[in-house]
Length: 346
Image (cartoon, rainbow, N blue to C red; front, side, top):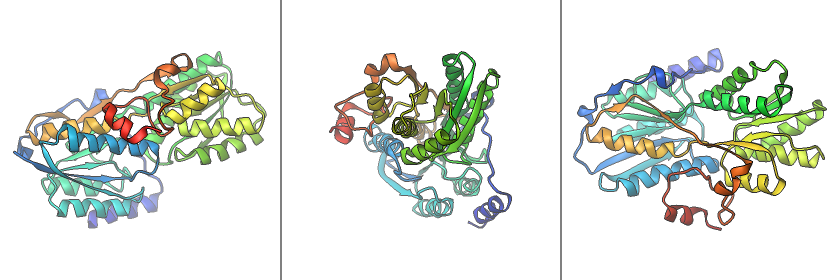
C-alpha cells in the first residue's frame, strides 16, 4: 500500500503520466505458469472500473460469462468490485481481493502509473494478475490483453484521408484524457493524418466516451469552425453526440468514425451517415478468462495478447445492426445468443 500511495503522489506532482505500451512485435515471450497451477475449483477476483457505460457493461458480461458459465467447472466464486475510475479506491479494492485470497486477479486499471505498485504487490503475494484493456506501468504481471489502440487511430486517419481525398478540416473526439487507451488512439490519428498535409486537425476534445460531452464539444467546434469536413470519433456514443449537434445546427453530416454500438448504428442507418466503424474490443474480457483458465492449469501463456478488431462501413450496416435489440448492444461480441437476448432484448 505504501508503494502505491507514493506512486499516486508522484503522478500528482508531475502531472499526467502516460505509459506507452509495447505492442505485439515487442512482447511475444511466453510465461511459465506452473507455479500457479491449482486443481480448483478456484476463486477469481476482478478489480474493475465499474459498469459506467454500455461498453463497460458488455465488458463485464464477457467476464461473467467466462467465469460463471464457460469455465464454471474451474471457478467456484467470482469476487468483483468497482472503483468508478478512482485509482486510490482501486488500490484498496485490489488489497481487499488479495486479502480474500483469490486465486487469480483481473485488473482493468483506472491509472497506468498509479496501479503499477498494487499489481506488483499482488504478484509478490503469489497471485497471478491478468491485466485487461488499459495497461499498467510495469511488466510485473502474467499477461496483458488489449486492443492495439494506436493502430485503431491510424485506421481512422487513413480512412478519413481517403474519404476527403487528402484535403480538409477534421475534428476529433477522444475518450478519457491521460489513459493509454485514448492517448494511443490520438497518437495513431495524428500519425496517419501527418501523411496527408492537406488535412488539418483543427479541434480536439476528450469526451470520456459520453454522448452528452461529445455533443457539447461538437457544438463548440461548430461555433469556432465554419467548415468541418470530417469527424474522427473514437466510439459510437461520441459519434452519436456529434451527429446530434450537427443536426441541431443544420449542418451537413460529414464522414465520421465510430464503433459497433447498436445505438450508433441505428442513428447512422436512419440518417444515411457515411461512416467507418471499428469494433471496441470488449470481448477481450473473455480472452482474459480463457488465459486465466490456462494459468490455473499451469499452461504457458503469452505475456502480451493483442486482441484484433473488426472494421466495417455503411454498406455493411445491415450485417451488424440489430433493431430488435436495445441501443446498448455491441455488434462484435463473443456472448452466446441466450446471454444477448437476456440482457439486450427490447
